[in-house]
Image (cartoon, rainbow, N blue to C red; front, side, top):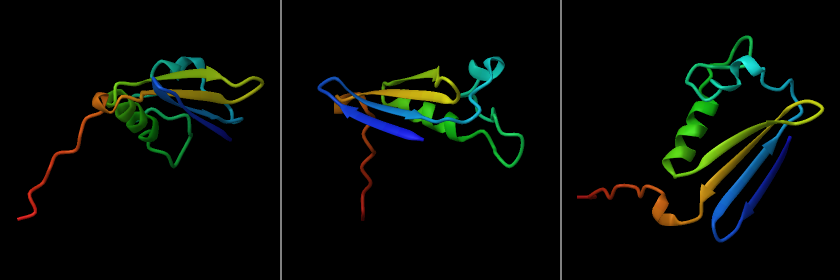
Length: 94
């Protein structure tokens, strides 16, 4: 697995590439839905769902591509502008 991280004035780019079996074309459109998994057992299909939720909440996007000759590349684009990200709510300590 390779992970590349780049920050520029516009966005944070995170690229994760693996050399696994890849994602079948018949589920590629649904890979970010809760419960969808490429695993045959022992997995719940929650990881990519959560990543997509957090990236979208921050105003970003995700691209999915084949990693020839095998595997998948996920590229996350997250705006560098802090105002694009939801701010945590303040909690009164009293």
